Image 1 (cartoon, rainbow, N blue to C red):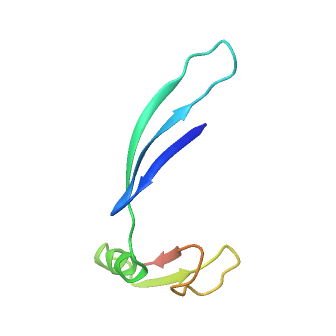
Image 2: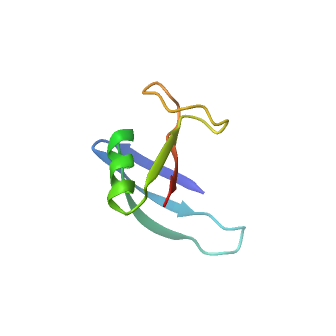
Length: 76
């Protein structure tokens, strides 16, 4: 799979799936909106979740602005 993207306000690009030899290939465009942590937590609350916990890495580290990832666990 080949991924091309251009960063900006969001992440816009295209994915190209490359199958085994002898098969065809397909192409699909995608558009991704990048959210700030506070903005994403607020969207979760607006969707009806009562509690939102943000994590900054796969090991369960609490989210900080310098975190490499943004993960969320939202509960009703």
